[in-house]
Amino acid sequence: MNLYPKKLIVIGDSGVYGWGDRDSGGWVERLRLNWMNNPQSPIIYSLGIRGDGLENVASRWQKEWGVRGELRRQLPDAVLLAVGLNDTAKVGRSDGRPQLTAKAYRFGLHQLLKEISQRTHVMMIGLTPVDETAMPFADCLWYSNEASSIYEAQIEDACLEINVPFLPIHQAMLNEPDFNQWIEPDGIHLNSSGHHWIYQRIMNWSSLLKWAEMEPIRTPTSLIS
Image 1 (cartoon, rainbow, N blue to C red):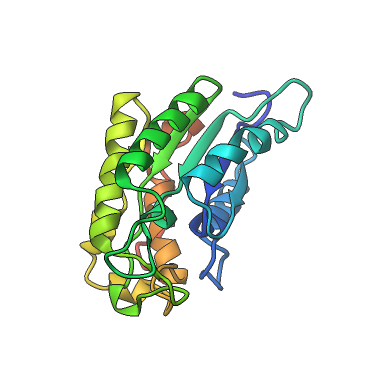
Image 2: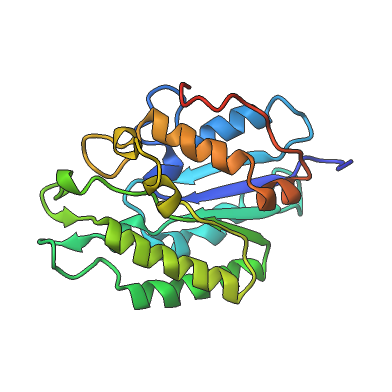
């Protein structure tokens, strides 16, 4: 038994923030509330910022991680990354230049994962699908499922190279017959049902549960939150 609960930093973009989930505040918040029922469960800090891409997360992770140890000389025990969708967006037109090329994203992510792994345990999840019929987002950004698939492949490769636990998301959600109904009208943010789907996968992710020293959480399979 741990003397003090472990601390998990979840850092990323609007998906981590929980934007779109008007019922329960997002998949991170759902997990945080569930884990609060067990005093030995890890304490979760949700550090999502809307619009963040890889470069922003890389510039802020260490400062935010370093001030959330709660106890003197204690630092959080792990970082869970969820970032990359905003990097895929093409600017101005559907065939425009992405915010960060796949090659640059792969290089930057590898550097970030290596940096975090030298300080604490790190895990990462993949990218969510988008509704391409709703593009462009904010009248200037074009997201696509083809790009999301390419960038998630970069995540998987980077994680495999340095042995970082990775939970794929993109294709698994695309395979769901109703996935389009889990996306907000803006085309990129998940609604409550979409966040619940992510939450169900996260809370039974073996790599996360092994780190947390917990058993799988049994809940109904319904998407009703």
